[in-house]
Amino acid sequence: MIRLPDERHETRAADPLRVAILGCGNVGAEVARRLLEREDVRLTRVLVRDVHRPRPVGRALLTRSIEELLDSQPDAIIELLGGVEPARCHVEAAVRRGVHVVTANKSIIARHGQALHDLAARCGARLLCEASVGAGTPILAALDQLRGDRITAIRGIVNGTCNFILTRMETAGCTLDEALREAQRLGYAEPDPTADLTGRDSAEKLCVLAQRAGWGWIHPDAVKVQGITTITAEDVRSARRQRCVIRLIAEAERHTDGAVRLCVGPCFVPVAHGLASVTGCGNAFEIEAQLAGRIHLQGPGAGPRCTASAVISDLLALASPRREAAPKAHASPRRAATSRTTALRRHYIRADATTGGPDPGALLHCIERSGINVDSLELRPGRAVLHTMPVTFDAASGLAESLAEGEPDRCLVAPLVE
Ligand SMILES: NC(=O)c1ccc[n+]([C@@H]2O[C@H](COP(=O)([O-])OP(=O)(O)OC[C@H]3O[C@@H](n4cnc5c(N)ncnc54)[C@H](OP(=O)(O)O)[C@@H]3O)[C@@H](O)[C@H]2O)c1
Image (tube, helix red, strand yellow):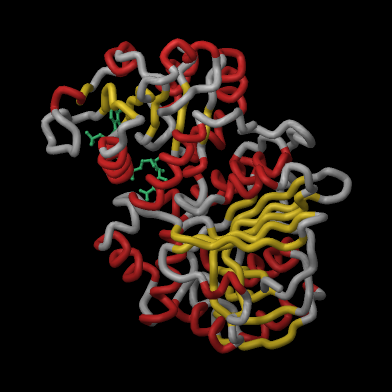
């Protein structure tokens, strides 16, 4: 039997945990099926839009009304709606009643996590969100466990859809559009994949990671983001010639002066690097901590089963002694610096000029004017492909944009991950 830690629940500590689920889609249906098998949990209501569709729970449990759901007196709700609204206001309503919340929703945590955590603390409720990053890969728990250390960097592959597309482009030699259509056919990409492809989904997850690292709440709009939409089959072939693959990497670093820098963008990753071996919808994380050193964590980044694992584990954690969800020890809310990174790195640049473009001589002149040292260079009318010597991301971007005549959509700038 579950024993809840706070006084409010002590009177019925031997009773099953009363749980209501918001959403019965991919993840909600899997969670509902698993909870129905447990004796220590009793489902009170399940919120959906369409109560007539077949679901793993009986019709009597389904409701379209959040009030009816909250009136069923759950000890905890599991929010699996997705998106910001109405998920955020439903979570707020539950917390105001002192009801604990488990969510897999990175958007509400990244954008409203601070307000929701503060409210939960005032109302005696807990808000757990392990599944919001890495699905079933317990990356937030790993960061919690390092609260006695000083985390200096986190980088990783946090978007399974983009990783699937990039690895399909690599293995099948197809275009981004072809790989996206395949991902949609297999259910790995949403009908509207904009948040994934533009890197916004990764930026939200990165903010949740940074908060868990103890760096404070950073709004996703403060993350420098570049998506994968401009990557071509030729870029993937160029990477292979350099014994690299292209991966969308989310990266957060905390400098000794306390400044925090968050960025998301495509990188060239050497094939021997751990992040290069992550294929399909996989996620992978590298944490650098002062005492613990470099830690790697890798696992499936999407799917109902692995997400249900994290959700149910959070639910059961409500029964254990309070684990601080928002570590305070060295938390200091800061705005992130807006440049992608100040580190000097080698960069891949591919730039297409707009209308047939200037001749190779003019492109060469543009490169010489930038003062950037070039390791290898391939010039064709209207196209420049080059690998730079170590340089800042801003300098590489400046060169790429001037080669592409100010059109960022016509170039790709990818730092090399060391
Ligand atoms: N799928 C994954 O692999 C995965 C991995 C990690 C995290 N997550 C997160 O888990 C959450 C759920 O994802 P999912 O893939 O399960 O989504 P989904 O398949 O689209 O399911 C959403 C569910 O929420 C219900 N819903 C949506 N808006 C509603 C509203 N306004 N009122 C009532 N019900 C509403 C839908 O009802 P109807 O069924 O009636 O339409 C549906 O049952 C999201 O936050 C997602 O980011 C998902």
